[in-house]
Image 1 (cartoon, rainbow, N blue to C red):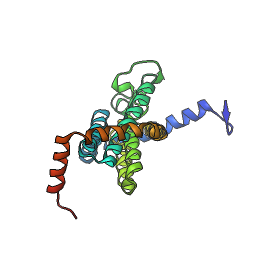
Image 2: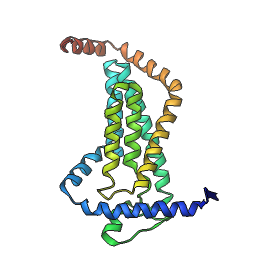
Image 3: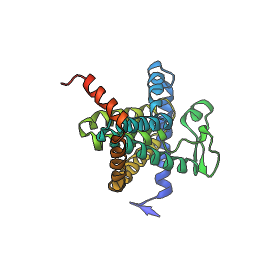
Length: 223
């Protein structure tokens, strides 16, 4: 198959060459304190904390009776879960050594259906997929927070390169997965929303919970 005079294989090789060149440059600042610090901070976009964030936000919205918060949590949780499932399926199929393997051992390998160990699962970037899906989910419910959310997702994605965790094309693929996962959840949301409303209504009928909500509302100063 050819596109614009170039075969698919040629395009892949061109992208890989560019990725490897960037990885060599990134290796020079891999151990810089700023790179390491930002890398540690970016771990917030790993799947356990992201799923936990969605679950806690959903629970907080349900317990407080705040539908908007509950919707944000549900959308975030579903989007991240779907993005995680997609990237996991791809990682189990596509083998690609991470940039730190190239930097430390001078070895670069790609293939299909090989080892799924961490050093061989560079493609795609799961941190980017989860961060982008979460950012778009939050922006759906809180449009005013779109820029900070997108900025955080972009920062998380970008730091994966200098920390030698991913190649640029891994980041691009992760971002596409995040966008697609959130779009799928948004498309299905009209079918999910009634269940959220039923749950909120059921919780609102619990007298002790209503009392707690009233006391909290009375204790929180109004603007």
